[in-house]
Image 1 (tube, rainbow, N blue to C red):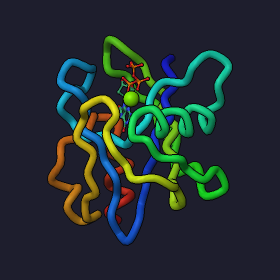
Image 2: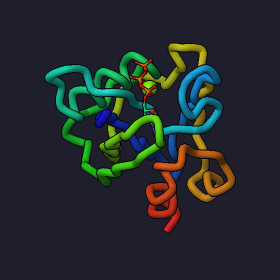
Image 3: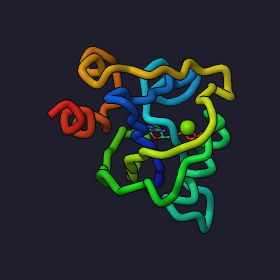
Image 4: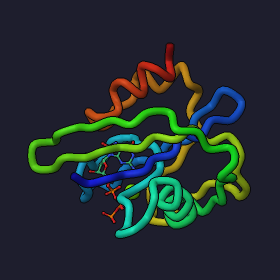
Amino acid sequence: MIHVAAAIIVKDNKVLLAKRPDDKPQGGKWEFPGGKLDDNETPLQALIRECREEIAIEIDLTSCQLFDTVEFDYGDKQVVLHFYSVSVFTGEPDGQEGQQVRWFELADIERLEFPEANKGIVERLLA
Ligand SMILES: Nc1nc2c([nH]c(=O)n2[C@H]2C[C@H](O)[C@@H](COP(=O)(O)OP(=O)(O)OP(=O)(O)O)O2)c(=O)[nH]1
Ligand SMILES: [Mg+2]
């Protein structure tokens, strides 16, 4: 099982998404910023580190709440996704790996392509 932490960052009814690089698994799809837990790392520690490394923001730990934990089998890979909602952060989000990073109106994310495992999360955000 690969454990992944991902941040659902919402501000003014908009949500921050990043486009996965084409050469990565689920490439070209929109994702909640995040990544795999390092050895001995908790999901929250990974969340903070990944937001720093991938989009150059500092998230406020006290504003993070577990939104959902999702297990998904991609066939070649089994993942456990730890989704956290994040409401407070500092810095201006900027893709550090050349990836597109954008704010979307919540109502607009229905039309985007997400990794399979995100289906239930996106539905819950739209509800
Ligand atoms: N970050 C993120 N990953 C997701 C989401 N949905 C989803 O199925 N995944 C999957 C895709 C990948 O198999 C895995 C995350 O791996 P990753 O490639 O982003 O990991 P990472 O940032 O640590 O990158 P790397 O070390 O492999 O370069 O989780 C999501 O919303 N956000
Ligand atoms: Mg990542």
